[in-house]
Image (cartoon, rainbow, N blue to C red; front, top):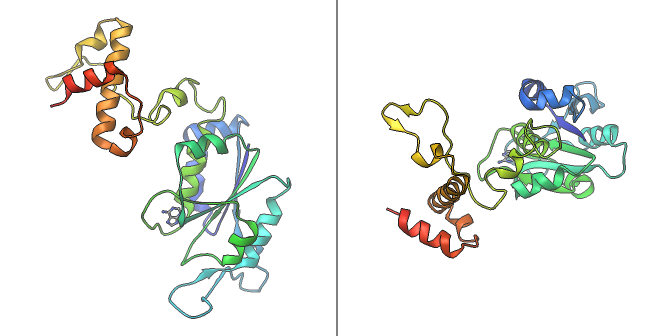
Length: 240
Ligand code: ADE
């Protein structure tokens, strides 16, 4: 998969894309991620990428021509999917990440300033995503979030193939608590069942804990879960 991230601040992306699992996936050729400076596509002497809004008002708007030229420069395949990062977009989810991981080429436009000329949305953008109900200073963090969450679904990117299946959200619920050595930390003990070696009991305990955590932290997800009779009994017995 190839991801082109169009931005006015490519330096913001660099270290994130070079280190950790994403950096390794790039070096191994599993994904190719490229930061593109939009300003390089401005044609005037001052390399102007933004201007004041028609109709008046505060702030600057990203100009259409440099963004359009930057998209054109990376769009080799007709089928590239163009995403716009903005607080006006639909909230990005786990399901979107899994779907985008099937694409061969994604182009991500990072908004800055007060917004982007609407004609870029009209003509070029396939999907507009927000990463949450708050306003960031620009779309770069959102582009990194979407790149990271999507890359995890590309085979080979995670060391352990199982982990993108097992974790929170895959089953519409949150993950159970995890422990590692030592067995006692500041007088707090690892739950006995995890030391039992009884995998049926461990799986039951993990599911119950995941359900309890979902009920407490994400009642919206909990409402959509299909509970078995055993689940209901376990929840009743473990609620305080
Ligand atoms: N740009 C500014 N705020 C944003 C947000 N919440 N999500 C995506 N892009 C943004």
